[in-house]
Image: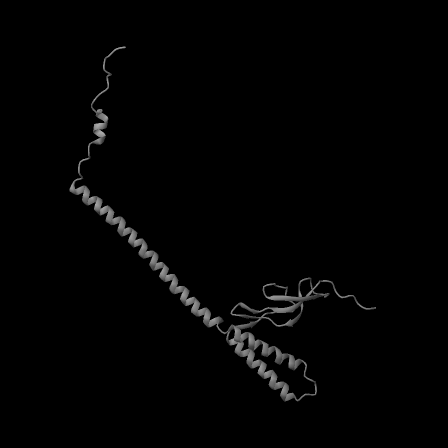
Length: 187
């Protein structure tokens, strides 16, 4: 074997020298341009945040106005339900009054019912049409079925009147629905 030393370079290669040398410091113009770019990016970010907050606040204002409007429209919903119960009872009383009752009493009760209805209408309460209409599960509650000459699914009777308050269901109409087959006639 030979005793010659191996031929390994003792100094780092030229490639490593060029990679390890520090870059020259940026010129003042380059530093200023970099700072301007950084500030423009920060300004753009802050402007974006501002626009987001402005839109969020605008949505908050719109939501508050709508909630206040809804509170005024629907705020007395529970009172309307109770008044409707009173109106229902007065109507039942008129229906079941004996024929020989004083006409003035009947007229007075009917006028009272009319006044209640007028107050309810002014507040946005509307009667749900029922008899002869097609059953709508969003407005009507089926209480039974009966044979009828009306088509299947048509409402034959209203057991309890239904109402909406500004288009929102206040109380469904309780109804009887036609099966679509006419009743068999007795011979």
